[in-house]
Image (cartoon, rainbow, N blue to C red; front, side, top):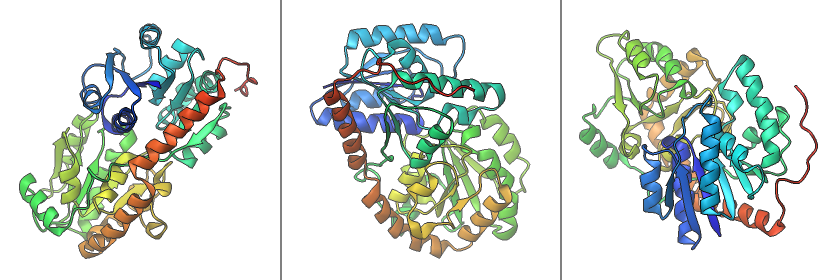
Length: 387
């Protein structure tokens, strides 16, 4: 089949999920194309994975640019003539469904709902759009049951709901032992003995690094030699750096910036922490666990579902609760040996439940079922609930 993936953003977990699908689908002999904005890593990595890359200039946020972006994307679809269109994240879902409106079998994958990122009138408008846009997708593909539940609770009446959890490439993300930890810390210039928490993610409100910095003084009160590394870049970096500068002297927060490969940072860590405000199912914790590193997450969609049962509830804290986050961080970092013991079992869990091959197989099965059905998402559907 010919598959066209459309993605905005072009970095982070959404881009990595897209590239993993491209690699698997190209290896199976499908013709795969990716439409995405220039810049970032997605275009280059998708091309290396076997995709034809089609430039689609588009901004990350919605706004007055949407009609032009939808028209450009419509022309790309007309030229590519895909058998199936796979739209990744809110912006591609918005522009893609407006452009195609059911002319091509369409899968929309939110990677976290647009309305979760907004408040007030903007959130209400996002809910109304998702209710309307559902009629122009043959399937809404969620990465966690809780993400699907949020859609249902918002009144989104999808033609078909499918849940396929995120996965990681276990050949690439290998278990890192104690020797690997020492080598990684030496290469990164890190203290070989300090308890180290690492947060991998875009520096933005969604990922909650501000909450982590709010919690950090309380962590230092219990584990004075603890260290924190923020791996990633984004719009909130200046504000986060200013906040970090107010922390006690002698306990700096390391801003690693945008790195081409976060694996050395996971290997160096005792614990990987992600205090997100919202998610679908974050990829960074899965990659950390594949590296045999325990994680600490906020209880947002996908978090509990990606963790093994024996890690619950200790590896989860309420969202936007810096004191609870600090207490859990201090308990973990105060027991480095305990963190090390947890590594092997969490790696085993990811290998059994979140292998990227399993994810690709689930997505491929959905594609085949949609195409075998022969239906188009243009057929009439009941109206979405008002409000």
